[in-house]
Length: 332
View 1: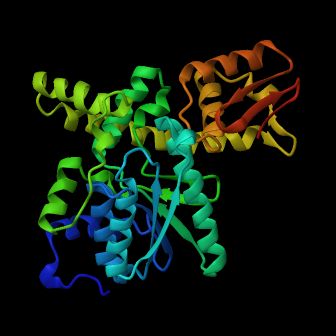
View 2: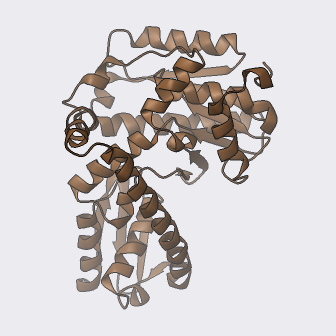
């Protein structure tokens, strides 16, 4: 299917195209895109806009859907998305989870990214392509929710930057979130204006899930007292993200001065200030851990490395930090 003609080019296409066009490194031309599509308004709007502009960038579109089996209609959702992709000649892939293994938001997220990474590897190997980018439909509204969750659980400075627009997935594939430029209200308007079908997951209204509670209770009440607060929070998040990016670049330079073939030189690390030391440790761990690491855990690790000449500390995803008098290593 060709890209959308000028007669059907909307303001949403213009905004989206401008975002990508102005940052050529964000999503390069002539690559394979693997889009995670739940069937909700955000991911369906993302899929449609990407498909409409793909010819301008010579992209090949692939869709992956993960069925968590959290509700009785989940199988039908998968069929609906598959049919939509079939109509547009888009490659469609799906996986079905064992419900017992994805019983929490965290385990479901880990399962999705694991399957996405596996599928990206298969596409890279079977299609003999130079690169595969993984895309998700996260919006600025999701980023606001993440900010509040991280703030409540005691995140460190980096965690207050919301959802990153671009990061590595399992140290191999680039994960990008091009819809962070839109709010959830805007993706609803995109679906309405472009007549895009979507299927609302009934579990999105379950406030026993932390993110749903933040969405339907906390933000809802904050908006009543301080109208427009979500937008202001997101402006702050964007500022924090810019600061984090600057810190990350400086941190990478600092890591180069600490690293050796045997690991991180402990003597250099322990002579740094507490904030600098914690920032470096967080950066190293964040490259390997999918799950957000709390500032308390980072601070505890930093203090133990100073006080003890040898030891180890475990983190999510089977990551272990081991140190002796001279070196610190991070492995799984």
